Image (cartoon, rainbow, N blue to C red; front, side, top):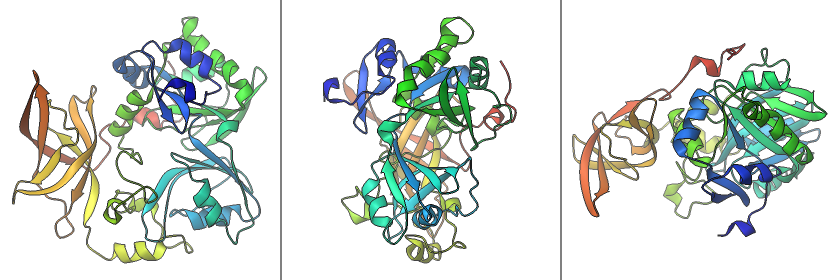
Length: 394
């Protein structure tokens, strides 16, 4: 696919100028950067300084009307009845069989005013699900320019720009600002597991907003880098965040019935609330909750320095193949191979001794090796600054 068929972001003029390697891909039809300079420099911008990423391609839906909250509460597995105005919640939604269609975030902007952000196209499912509810659903992906500002100096950068009140903004909260005539909504959200914010504005304000923030780099106040999807993928695995289409096949796109996954199988049982009124997939999930776990998406660190991409996983006790690596990354901070892996459970429990069969190429010859794996029950990487309020200044 050539870049000429991509839809251009409101930030495109700045993105094109900064992209040295010209590695682009399609994200929901938009021209989106995989890498701007080097993956290493972009990774360390997220973990050590400040990074900027264009989020405009993310699918965004505006949901309004008298039944908007009731509709969303029926749609997702999490209870949204107590979601306050100017708050954000991470959610997933399923089909009638209890298999995940997508994950995303719900922003409550007003009494009957919500924004749902998703990785993939969801307008068809939302339109079907709205039957019987007095709601209006509009796709606003192209109407909102979104920019992620992530990293330990992100608070200081935005504070220097003139955005006020961020010292009181807690994770998953929203505030509204007007800076240099630009109306901006700021949410303390992100996909990096680090301190960070997401800024939302009208497309006509995009370049001015970019220049306000990136200008802090050009005048020497801060080191700021544009980042692409490859660096984002590294930090989201470190943080233990899942990605539809990478770590699991969504129910809508699965060709084989056994390829789709439930919230329990993805390790997202904390997002399923059986105490709230009926939601799509509730009966199937209630039945599943009574059965022993048959499989889970598990965080595994893999010994050695060989990349375990697509590696098969085995139970050393019986030699049985029990799963595969879905996503993996070499973590520069942790100096380890980190993976999100789909594993079959035995009698409701994860096998204790897991080994990976890794194939790699060396001097045009394929070789194989075995590496021991270790289960992590927490995110691989977590820093207190991600949730500290007020954030540290730099």
